[in-house]
Image (cartoon, rainbow, N blue to C red; front, side, top):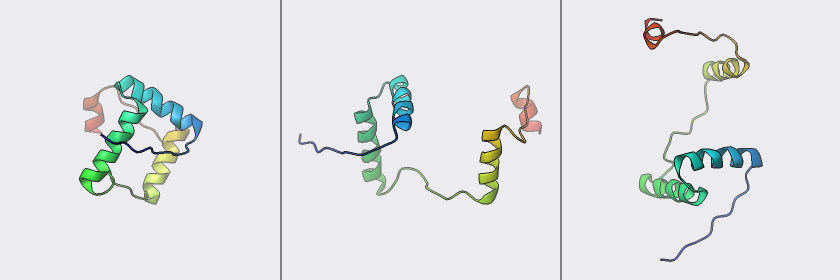
Length: 82
């Protein structure tokens, strides 16, 4: 089977974090890229939605990162009741 090379540049921190996760999943970076490309080919596009978040979502993400406006629950039931 013939193969072709894919070359890309990525920030070292993102690469390291992603590769730690892939290792935990038992995947090599090459396997993960092969899976990604296979899904693109099968779905005739990206295998996930790519959207620009609305203002409410952006604010929620920013608050979450800053630890602001968070609710804490002692159980899943309490979460759903809220």
